[in-house]
Amino acid sequence: MSTAYFTHPSYLRHDMGAGHPECPARLQAIDEALRDTGLIERLTCVEARAAQWQDLQLAHDAAYLSSLRQRLSDVQEVEQLDPDTAANPHTLEAALHAAGAALEATERVCRGELRNAFCAVRPPGHHATRSKAMGFCFFNNAALAVRAALEKHGLKRVVLVDFDVHHGNGSEDILAGDERVLMVGLFEHPLYPYSGVPPMAGNMLNLPLAAHTGGQEVRELIREHWMPALEAFRPELIVISAGFDAHQLDPLGLIRLSEVDYAWITEQLVDVAERHAQGRIVSCLEGGYHVWALARSVCAHLRVLSQS
Image 1 (cartoon, rainbow, N blue to C red):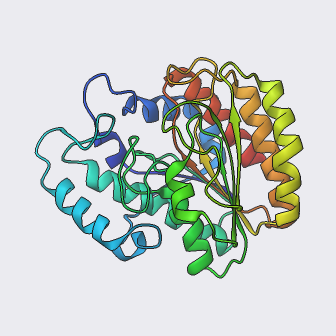
Image 2: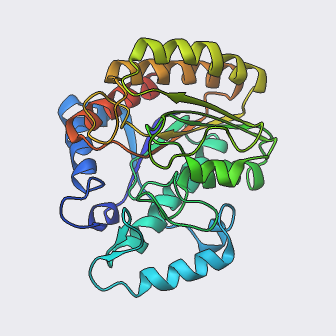
Image 3: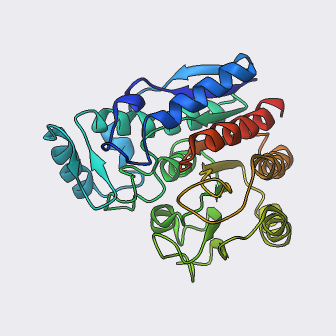
């Protein structure tokens, strides 16, 4: 079985305006780095399908989906949904294919067709709540993957790991209180969206980090807090909200991780997946806004996944 790399051309057409940090150049940098390093040869490249609207109700309210569909369908140029989040005429197609990548990757990993998968998607998803688009996000790709694994593919225990520098408030909103799910996260605090402390429910294990926290401190916190919880939970699938904006070069945060730290975190998750989940991991791109650091970090993440 192989590691899949899910992409779609629409991701590059979604554009929130000049100077916006969540830009098409992010994926272009990742693609170039994978080709330059030869890592692309290890991966099974898949063009993602679009999510069906009924599938989106696994994580989102029907009224929200109807309203968002109408609003995005009517966009003519670039329209602001909030001060951070904008849409252009290609946003709806990209968002549907981003959610579709997460859902298809989950289906194929759960069926045993793929060992693991990385979804190189735009727009990201972990700030999208049940009923609100925010923080560059429209549909919550990772939460959809978790819910699909439970509701459609027969799994009983799924972990969501979020190591983006910003708290995954949308994922927490969708998954809090579901005892079939353990969500573990780390994030800079205080920082947008100014949530996660305290967590919303007992199935959330959040590690708020002070600005300038370094890689060794993060590793110790993961060893002390995440690893015992993951071992006790014995997940049948690990879904990752893979944000790389806690990198020391990233302009939107002040945490001091490097690509070596991302490789180490991935190794720990692969080890847990090997013991409890038949190696099954679905990873979805979230943040990461220094394109060079993002590309190198994704390569480090994928190098580990593709060797498992």
